[in-house]
Image 1 (spheres, rainbow, N blue to C red):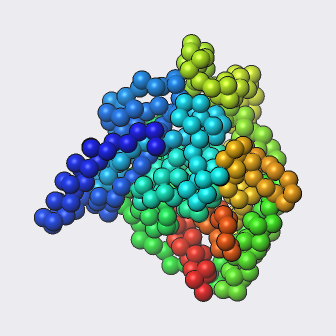
Image 2 (cartoon, rainbow, N blue to C red):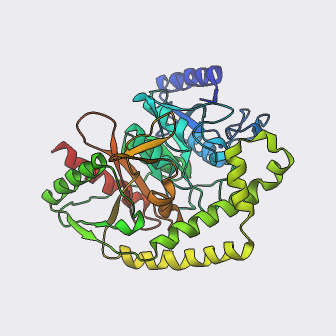
Length: 403
């Protein structure tokens, strides 16, 4: 936690408790404690973005998503740590590393690191994070939680400091799919939709190795295989999908991410380079080296790729994919084991997770059963603007673990 609004939260909790006793409920989240990533404005509280660049910033108003959560009754308790400006490394030079509550020798592997740790440690029921290249999903995977990236667009980003606006999304990290569902639609300011009935018999599960095209650790592969066998036993059909444009998706996504980050922060960091760490400066330098024509070319390709992937998805009801190459990363260097090798966990986002932001797919990461040790996870995607359907599908998929 970067900031805890202890007295304010306790006072509000007492008011909410009195309201419940008198028969008044503010909404489906009445009194539910929620922490928020420190790029999201909460009135009167600092919004540091985990950086010295904004160490003196105090929010003048709530972000739109916070106003919506408060309207549904949520109790905001504080701001969570993150990678600096969502672009630095796991060792934040101003606020330190976030350790994994499941095993403090490991980290949580993504820029929404503090949000996942806060939920895993029991500080709050749900935390709000941002997901530009997989930050809600990688951190949820490392801590055995649910991490949600919505369709790009519906959640109002007003009052949320950007990373790369065309890739940015805001979503919850939670212990359960139902909690994530409630918080997501509340943050949107919309009613929670009625659950859809999903029959696993005959459901088409697409696997598209082209999207990540990288090795995964046997512990992850075994958990995926066990889960898929259970689903096949319930009547699901597994289909292998091909997407030849996947390699270009990775490269174009990085171009968009770096260019848009530089457009947001080049002036501020240029005026105060000492206020950010070396990793942020390196990331910025890569972005400023990209010219506008190259950026426009990446945007044009993105539109083409989104259309092409809709054709790929037409033969499946959902897409299942690994969230990360291995289990939760080491705290010391954010590396994870893939067999006998060590590979970067956070940087793997470009391969394993950013395609969902690039292709605008609502995507939910959820833990899988495995015997002992750190959790494994899988991410489920559906077509853009089918967020409610995705939640219903994932709730149905989780039932196979109870059989």
